[in-house]
Length: 257
Image 1 (cartoon, helix red, strand yellow):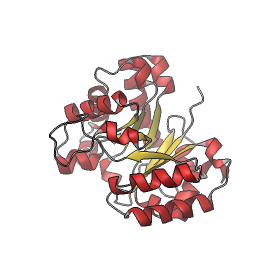
Image 2 (image 1 turned 30 degrees about the horizontal axis):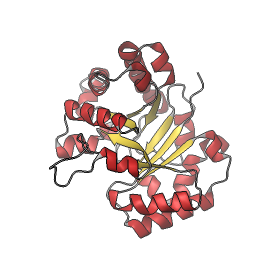
Image 3 (image 1 turned 90 degrees about the horizontal axis):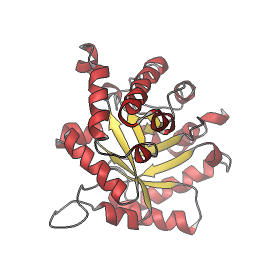
Image 4 (image 1 turned 60 degrees about the vertical axis):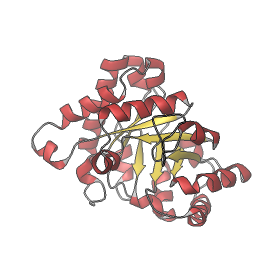
């Protein structure tokens, strides 16, 4: 099955709304129209920049999708500091990252919390990017496959097969995030294959054939082409390199290099 790659730039806690506007304008300057036909491009800014970027994207008719870095598992209520998925959907946010390793390790998000956020994003009509991945210690101990399989199963619990087919799973080895280390293309493909096999077991082969599996972990202009050449890799979740318009443009143009 031909799957449209999805390249998402996660800006994390960087850039105010004015800097975010400038970055998007620079990025679009470096891209040409047919790039948007080859892959779906997503910008994932801090919450404070979402409204500004929504106005820019709609006003200039840019073919860039908006993503959010997380969302509440609740639609509304007395949850000070949380951001409702319903409110995100009202800003035309199309993707929500659920269970990023930094949310899991720094803020204590469990598999069960991540699963509820996946359900909340789907309920609001958005597409979850479910993040899974092992630590360096887990990889060294030989349990990487088991860890990723458990996270995929838990994240997709209760999700209908037709919904699973529409979402994105990002394999992000924790030991490669922000370290400069990158899984080899073959290792990345093997782990993305573990993700796909688990999806097949959970939701059936049709869902596994359709679900898009990203690789995330020190993705750079110099390694994107090899990563994207592997059969199970359907895109990239890009961190630091997405903050540089020229670098991110090269990553987005992987199919034209």
